[in-house]
Image (cartoon, rainbow, N blue to C red; front, side, top):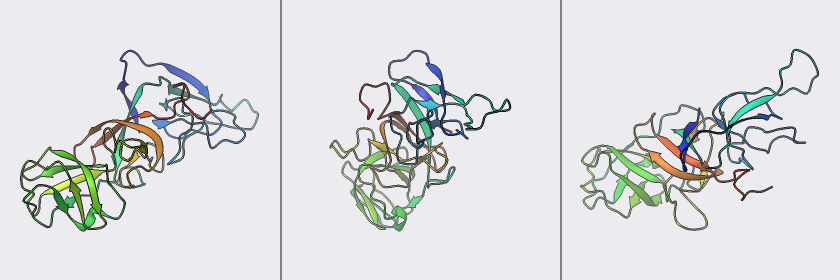
Length: 241
């Protein structure tokens, strides 16, 4: 599940109990307004859209259209601050808990600019991030500036040491600041996994819900996280209402 990673302005959480118009089966998902017609309350997002979000739902809530004493009031607890930093585990696919794809370099790079492995896949990762987990450049990370489909990834800021055959890397479609253009590749979108509790780290950069990447925790295949803020928060003053 995604969790509260802090706030830009510090201070305490603001927790509100909101009515739901669709069941929240899992905790730790970004709440949204779409997906419920007519709107009877807030709803989970889709994997790619989280319109007019009130924040992060930190528990579950059940919706029922049937009258009866056995039905509890349909409510979900939401961390509602617009400056909320949301922390989500990066998954290596659409399913929760998928390990990130491991790259094992197949061609030595004496200028520290090229990581070669067919496992880079076909999804365009330009303006994402690649980082070294084994070899002379361990713990170093660079923004991806070119992606040759199923062949290699290129960086412009060289890794400090040569990249040897067998050096291992991980990558994701996110970067702090993105590409610096209106397309916001890397920094302006996060796509959710199937249950909406994690971030799909295998999709093309610039794909997914409107979220603003704040920070990256670059560790291993199953313990790396993306931190982001709602790009379309209901209370931010800039939304689609």
